[in-house]
Image (cartoon, rainbow, N blue to C red; front, side, top):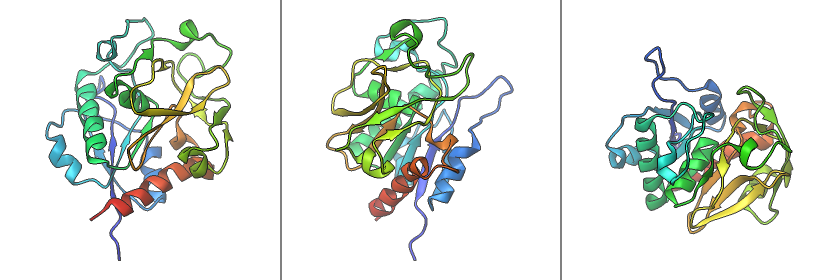
Length: 236
């Protein structure tokens, strides 16, 4: 009998109460998929040893990346910047690209991948793109909107459709696409909603939050199911 693959999930940064948190939906989605979740807090330094314990990784959402990481500009809406978290997740992203580890990058996670690949981000979508599509509900709440997925992508195969209306919860997004990344989904306003990494067996990034509706929407749960399936295959 195969043991469940260990799936690392990065957590939010330390908060004002000196606590580390992560929405339980991430953990539940991995468990439903048959994986064993392992939470990874900011501050871990030995990423090489850590990656050796994992069969797959989720770069979770939550908070913004320091704009200096992608030569961006500051904005009053940028929030929850944490240098320890940036440092850890950038190191993890570099490692999973090198080690070819199955990876699902969610919201902030896709932005981390794009940053590592030399891409840039929009500082604040309402200013940069407008509000034809609301990508989060004021002040900072999730909201659904339509996403069009390329029919020749891994993502379309995983979701089983080329049109979804997932929960969106972000005010930034990919501007210049990083090297070796292929855009495979966009919102009606043109904002990048998903990427896949070329020359990588399974690295999928989505700008939305599949964990929020995965318990009730098989299309969103399928992202976690496929990550765990790929992690099974990657285990020695």
